[in-house]
Image 1 (spheres, rainbow, N blue to C red):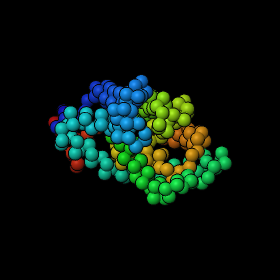
Image 2 (cartoon, rainbow, N blue to C red; image 1 turned 180 degrees about the horizontal axis):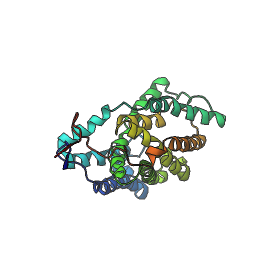
Image 3 (cartoon, helix red, strand yellow; image 1 turned 120 degrees about the vertical axis):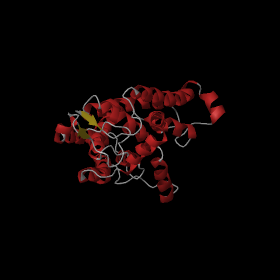
Image 4 (cartoon, helix red, strand yellow; image 1 turned 90 degrees about the horizontal axis):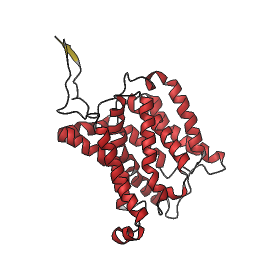
Length: 283
């Protein structure tokens, strides 16, 4: 008796995780490292770095670029189309939609109020239009990372470890990946402390894990989750936002402990099988 499963032409092997890490860190750290170690030369050649600089976008997009390149390498254009179809996966438990759309803003608002801040971020001198433009720009910045972190790394890790540990590993890598930006003048990270940020990254990566698996490997929901974290409408809530999210993560992990600590039901394929194809046994 043998198992026959309809699959795309090629699947992404677990070894691709190593190449994903090398590409992701290599692109970002090379770009940021140039501005850290050769600031005058880099500025003269490419201009002063800022959050809207094309090279900053390149550095931020590195996980997504690495993920898409690996999908193309192992699955070709056919595989890339199947991979991108995960952008259309939106069905999951309603509680996760509520958490993304309502819960995350409540965390920021609550954290801001605890430290005596406003309900919403102050309107910038450019007005609401400038804030909306920044919000749209943010959609094409951080969320693009999810093509790599959740698109490639999460499924590959979940072949070998339970979702909780996969989320923790990605969170740690995600935090370390950001480290050079804390030494870079001209971007938001230069005024932040790394340890709380690192803890926050691990917390967020663990929190998005059950959402990812509930939505069958959706790319859209993690991207929306990521976008909600950086929307400029929400007030500055540090350090209370991280503290609240840690508590929320503990509760979420406890309530979902059966799925978080078991690989049963975890998404493990980077390139999904053809639509309508189901595993079956044949003699």
